[in-house]
Amino acid sequence: MSNTLQIRNVQVEYPVADAKLFKAVEDVSLDIAEGEFVCLVGTSGCGKSTLLNVLAGLLQHTSGSITLGGESLKGQPSNRRAMVFQSAALLPWRRAIDNVSYGLEVQGVDRKVARARAQEMINLVGLSGHEQKFPGQLSGGMQQRVNLARALVTNPDLLLLDEPFAALDAQTRRLMQEELVRIWQERPHTSVLVTHQISEAVFLADKVAVLTRGPARVKEIVEIDLPRPRDPSVFRDPKFRAYEERIWDLVVAEGVAI
Amino acid sequence: MTSAVETVRPEKPGAETGPVSPPAKGIPFYRRTNHRLISVLAVALFLILWEVSGRVGIVSPFFVSSPSGVVTAGIEYFQSGLVWTDMKISGLEFVIGYVLAVVVGIPLGLAMGWYKTLHAALSPFVDFLFSTPRVAFLPLLIVWMGVGIAPKVALVFIMAVLPLLMSVISGVKTVDKTLLSVGKLFGASQLTVFRTIVLPGSVPSIIAGLRVAVGTGLIGMVVGELYASSEGLGYRIVEAGQLFQTDRLFVAAIIVAIAGVLLSGALARLEKRLSAWRS
Image (cartoon, rainbow over all chains, first blue to last red):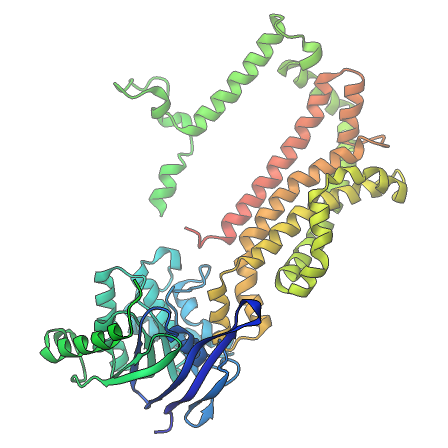
């Protein structure tokens, strides 16, 4: 497909104290087809967030190549990618709708057009009626909806999600996972999500890439063969449990830091 | 939101809690009354004690004056017309010095917070001046600029600009790094990141700096006139002190205090308007 994300032998090192280099990502190769949802799991500190930041263009890889539809992604961030942050990272002085339209404004989209598209995204993420609120007036779950809408509004070729629900309580988290599945199925984007929660990975993903303990390599790719469109009933599917156990075993085999 | 405003700001403190309201059992009076009323009562009590202590001879009014003495002196001061020339000259010194501090302090603070190289080059000077009792430079300023208005303006400026600078710099530096990544991720230029994230994010610190600068600028204004002057509110304070006219001293000091409170209050209202999002 035209917008396949190809990650080839990517290595990431960055300087730490004493002029030494810290190797966060050893050698990662991964193919993600257009419209595919991939989750990265691995023990804490294995380098999955580093990899995501490299995909975002916030960090540079030291060797290997990353191409999206054949075009190299090395260098500055571009409007082809968007990221959903773990902390909602909303601009507190902007109303919900103005946070959503932020990316479009930066990219010079006409104000009226930007507003209309932002409103559309607000509706999509289920925040109609809250568009004029400031982030401080929204709950954690609502803030993450704005965060997601802000990333989707630019219609990126690659959607990156860095533990987007990690800061939410268990109930809100589960509801947001279901919401993300619904929204993503309405607007499929090529997506990479980093998570610590294996059930989240199985529920959301077409493929789960289990990374080795850092520096990261791909230990195994688990194809999640659960029906699409997916809904919460898959949580009760015996296959779901089996995937969960298998991935857990793979992660634990790397040694879990306690 | 409206209900919150109503509960914290009853317009007329005395209206609901008049002296005739029946005493509620078991609740002490200071819990039944609102806090603004308590503030007013405390000031009233202080003024009464001040007046009475002078009249019954506990302390000599020669040293501490009295509220009635201050009022009388104030009326004389206004009737003589001297107050207007003093306020004009002091006001002029303060306004020019403060405006210069704002014009220099905000842009320079933003630039120093944003550009690490500029910060490295200038921070030794800023830190030095910030930590120095800056009024000590007054004699030097007089040597440089003579005895006119210029050294006073300069003193107001250096008194006001440093706290403002420090506040603006820290405002820029403490903007959430994740927010900067948000801008960067959408491909925003440095200038756009600055305009859409750093600047609005620094507004609370800028206003906090402006408020501190009012106080320090007024110190500069008064101290500037303590030395080699012939008019102004600060000069009037020295003159009254040397003549043991404590009531006149208090009048001039109170005028300066009122100016400070009014300016600071105006900035507080501006802050409220600019940071409606902090609810």
